[in-house]
Image 1 (cartoon, rainbow, N blue to C red):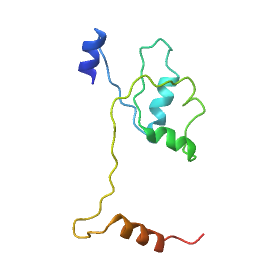
Image 2 (cartoon, rainbow, N blue to C red):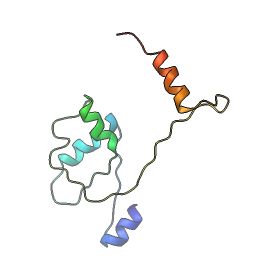
Image 3 (tube, helix red, strand yellow):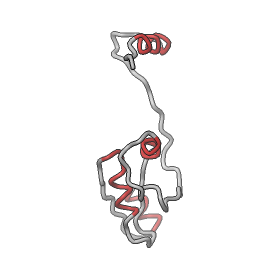
Image 4 (cartoon, rainbow, N blue to C red):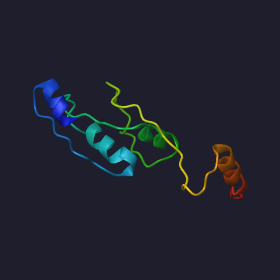
Length: 102
């Protein structure tokens, strides 16, 4: 992505990973960066979901962010061990039967 970005922008693109807290560390870093348009945040849906499920995200995290482009369409798969050929219906029934009591 850095190479393609450099070609498009005509200037160097540096990727700096800020792992941890499901993206919140990177989001916080970008939110606190100088708002000059040179620092971008690449994220997934996970950051938005964790905000709504009580994840540890600072109040700064979503302030001032606006989407600018879609980078990838992602597909999520549910898989089981090959020797356990269950259908999704079977897997759901099993999960419901093992649901912990409240």
